[in-house]
Length: 157
Image (cartoon, rainbow, N blue to C red; front, side):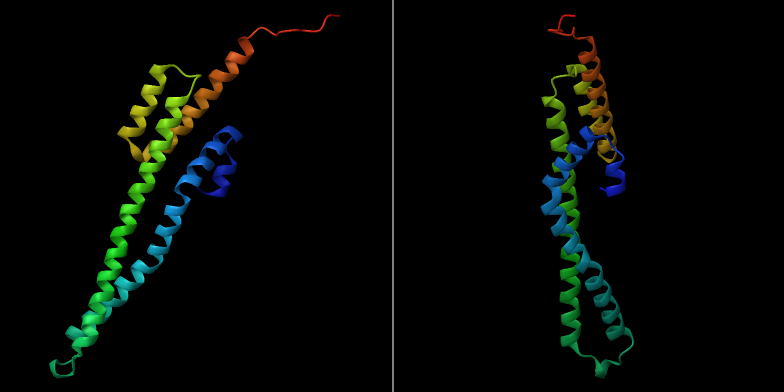
């Protein structure tokens, strides 16, 4: 998550977002490395294969180079597929953490928990937004409970 955006949240939300980032960081780092190589491999391979097939006369074609570029292109496509799978896994890990965190909450009623879990599962694209809303609602309830508690052991005047 963008540092500027993360700093705009209150501390209790930032802690939860940091927990999610800790869980997904190794996989996200691996995915970004794969993405770095994916498009150059695919692009270079595609351009060179097109050049070798359509712009070089039949007698001058080097089939060894054609094979090498095909293998590089296949490697690029395999990395691209792996990044897509990793992104789905990152989303799954994040959603799993959010659902577990909502389930463990002691402040919020079961009805509210169920509502937020349903929202997160139905619309994964809005999962983070709904999780932040849940955290805000949970904090609001906790603050209200603290205000309603009678003050104990007040010193006498």
